[in-house]
Length: 121
Image (cartoon, rainbow, N blue to C red; front, top):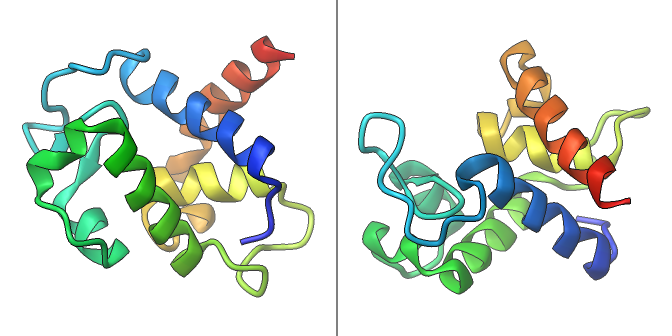
């Protein structure tokens, strides 16, 4: 992945705001399958290769570690389409899985993340 650490930190904040409104103690979402302030699914955790239990995704530090590992695997320069920002690429993968940046279903999610990012400017 090729995002400056500061830009990635801001994007992580925006993802959290969209997923949970910043609530560190948010209940499970998506029918109980998504956990924590970033609403991480078991499959996302497993795909990240990080050694945590799904319930540990309530811990924002562990969840960020999982997001980082997941993006290092899937949000790579060779996969990023020309003309797509890194922020959009990462946000849509977070929402829609490894090919989320190709799915129209992630466009609304990206719009919400983009709004949070623009409100921070």
